[in-house]
Image 1 (cartoon, rainbow, N blue to C red):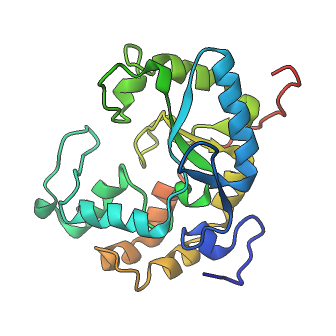
Image 2 (image 1 turned 120 degrees about the vertical axis):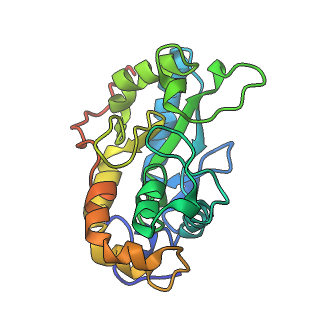
Image 3 (image 1 turned 135 degrees about the vertical axis):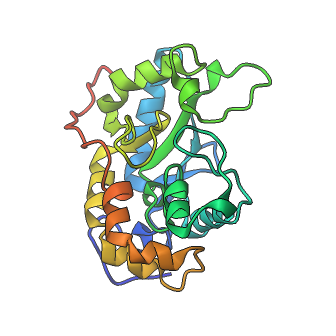
Length: 243
């Protein structure tokens, strides 16, 4: 797909996950990241390795179709739907507005996921995964007694050394905290500024989205609360030559 609406860092179709011309493969994986993020992430991995962590990405670029599948499955009750307390919800018992917000707690709108940009990754410390353990990506896993507590502390101290930060570090009333989610500051900040309500609305029209009417009716509010409402991007310094 091509798009002539060039926003500088990404074309509009790339910004909303409908084109993958901006991403490249991470060596040794089937995952893809924005071309500008590849070298910084590899440098972050190398720094983690020097401190005894195996920084493994488990999710990176995700296209519009994949995000729509996640959304629609949750809407239909075909995939677990969780409340803010982490307890299961029954999608069939919720109003359209309540269902929209329940999905958005943990999953982005298609067209609005930061993963579309290739700037954001979900990471774990593969060296800390107990044998036979299935990683869930929950806050408990990154808490003090969780398997990724050391990674949580390491990211808090060192993510910025290579230009990354965690946009969902705390509960801001939108997306729940995701301590595993890292974002390349310089690249994602420009993408966030470019993702307007109008661009998102264009991507969602006739997109086969469950609950589309309810979403579009509240799109400016949802955009403000679940897209823009992230941790302020920090100022980052270039990594030291010794790092």
